[in-house]
Length: 159
Image (tube, rainbow, N blue to C red; front, side):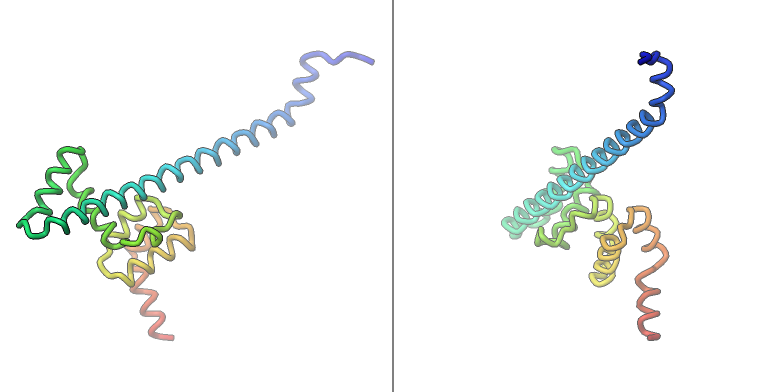
């Protein structure tokens, strides 16, 4: 039996190697995506806890005038968090006071878009669609901009 040369091994197994390489790339890509999602879920949970803690402190000190504004200003400085973002975190908690209502399928960037929607029914419409239809943040933003909710309500009224 003839011993194969290095070049014949490389040529004979090139397709097999490419398949292996593509599979390994896929495994890495899926693992990274799961890791990013896990980190973002932790971020959502962390921001919920921050919002909960700030609101609880505001309630405990509600007799002090302007305490909430002072608190946000001071925390913003001390934790180096943008005030607008801190107010968004607080609003996030107030809208989702029960942590179980926070969907693990949605990222913090999804929630940043959702908390800016004043109407609860409209916000839930977009949230449910974002989860059920696997919308990216860009898709969610586009659907809000295009008034999908209002259009869906008009269609529903016509039926």
